[in-house]
Each structure stands twice: as structure tokens, then as C-alpha cells.
Image (cartoon, rainbow, N blue to C red; front, top):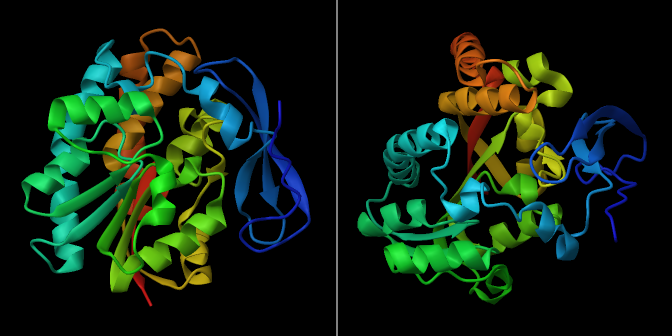
Length: 298
């Protein structure tokens, strides 16, 4: 199996990488992976993950909710209820930060298509990209969406989109810097980029350490903080103009973590930790379990 052996930090180019933590893939394989930290800029990433062409089997489980839309289990039912609420919040955010009621939008990693469908219903012209054939089929069957495969990114016309969104997708993308460059090309002048990713500097990440479910190795290759996200944007010609906490993520991630740990009553233990994480993020936004970053193309 070909693996990613990354010897240079993709953010700053630093060569001194130190082992930060060893995490287990509790979700699919039970395998362990090292997460390293760049000594120069602090960026963290998974070492030894399978290359993109071979990582598919780590997603092949009927419970992978982004691809299957499963409602199996209490935690996934909670996820669906939260998603329904958050769809409205996401749509409102896009309209506010773009200053447009209608426009052109590209949703990368659209999964089963809920957000793309919601934006289309608001009158936006939506293009969507998703690597999972199963998820694309779901989006077409349930929403009538024609979702493109991931290789379509190279075929879109430069300057086509007012807004590009990646909801919990950036952490999965093998070709990180190339993706940032492509996003800049595809956006119109002063276009808006909205990126949501887990926050490795969050309250729940620090509490759970190697058990933290949002490490999600090896599916998550990159582990961001508000600082490293701002630096990536600046590196590729984007200005960070807003950042927002995603308070509900702490509850879901904490419940999933307690499940992985084999805790008694994981739902309630996770809810308690999620509450404490949420309170922590009220006092300090950058402690939120996940963050939404809004960039403007310079």
C-alpha cells in the first residue's frame, strides 16, 4: 500500500517535524497513525496515511454518515436534527457574507447533497462536487442534483463562482496547496470562500487527546487551528474576514469519542463534555470544536 510520507510542512515548508500524538482509527480499521507537528509553524498532520487512490476502503462502512445518510443509532439521529437547523444557518451566512440573495456557488464535498439542495431552493445556481459515487447517487435520487465527480474541478471555467464552500472537507484533501490555488482561480474577483474544519485547539480536543473523534485518522489528513487556517489563506491570496464557532459539533464529537472509549452511557457523558466545550467557546471563540472561516479573495 502506498502511503503519504510527508517530509516537508505544507504550510511553511519547514523540515523539522516532531511526533505529536498517536491516534487509532476507531471507525473502520483499528489501525494506528502518527500525527506530527511542524516545529516552525505548529501545523499538525497525519503521517503514513494511504494515498488518495487507496484510502477508499477507510470510508467503506455503512455508518459513514456523510456518504450514506444513515439514521442508525441515537447519535446519528441527533446529527440529522442538528443538520436540519444548521442548513438554515449556513444558507443565511452565505447570503450575508456574499451580499447576494442569488449567485453562483460551488459546494466541494457535497456529500449527500443537503446543503447544495438548500442553496438551490434559495435561488442560487449551484454546482456540486463529490468523490463518493454512492453519495452522488443519493443526491440525484432524493434531490434531483447532478453532482460532479471530483475530477470536474479541473474543468470549471476560471472566475465562475461568487462563493465556494467546503463544509468539513478541507481536512480530507490530499493535495492541500493545489486545492487552495484552484479555489482562488475558480472564484470571481473578491469572491467568498467559506471553509469549516475541526479545531485541534478546541476544549474537547485537549480533553480527549488521542481519543478525540475529530482526529478521524486516516480520513482526516490535516488538523487545523484558527492560526494555521489564517496562514493558509494568506499564503494563497485570501484574507480571513470572519470566523465563527460551530457549537453543536462539540456535542456530536464528544458523544462519538465516548462511544469509542467504551464509556458507560456515552450519549450523556458526551452531552456533558459538549456542554462544557460550548461554555468554553462562549468565553473564547477559538476554543470551539469546529470553526467556520470566511475568506475574501484579495
